[in-house]
Image 1 (cartoon, rainbow, N blue to C red):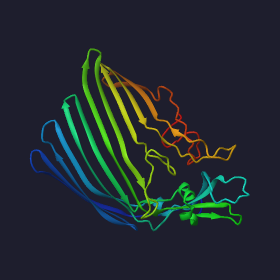
Image 2 (cartoon, helix red, strand yellow):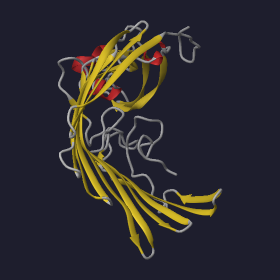
Image 3 (cartoon, one colour):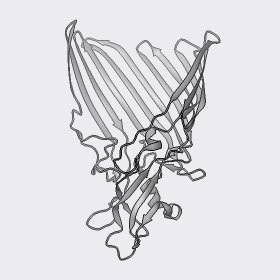
Length: 349
């Protein structure tokens, strides 16, 4: 059945076969070959190969690289979910009639699935270095690059209204020219590209008079994140900038500091997301003008946990999340029904 909230039922068969070969070429060089074939009823299949190389010229230095392809079939929701209608984000309509009281509103949107979707395909490669300076310290740095094609996506309401010369057919109006609803339809369109650098630092077994310490740092510096709305269209970047309904922060990390002494242990951890340019398209209710330009501040949370090994069979663990009671940074995003912050990346608790 069709319509908002309607029940629906579909099924499909999925099959896959895969194989891996690990080939030590020399004492220092190891090659891995893998392949996987998947088939999804109704949407077809693909074979995804992968080549990995691991080279360790010395005991302390390891170099690694991999290249391969990927396959992602559309979900059952992408294919068959009944049409849904809901209030969209607060957006400005540049073609609204002059006699309208407000050209900014939470325009209705209708979201459509698409039973004719094709699978997404990807190609990716990475290379990096691992260095173990001592038994107590090692570090790794890896570059990664991913490209998706036949991207399963829908053009967001923000992009539609900002490019009406191209997407006016997705905006349905009543006889007075007022927006009745905006059409958001799943389709295979364009490509998505992303690249970045992963960094890992690990210290362990640092023994002192007051206990044994350790630390771990895992960080990602995103170099590029952009997508097309259709084949041949220019790429739109959401790196450090909110577009439609999401943003990719340029830097993010987790840090943990560990301590042990006898039957007691503790961990102090930090999660960090860098700042970014806000959506900046929500109107001020009093003036009907865009709110002042906003940059969402960086978000940094500290957590603390402790443990006591009371007996060999009994351990007590306690913790404090967000120990400094850090509030989410202000955001004027209007892509969700929550306002004042972005629930995709932050939590008021």
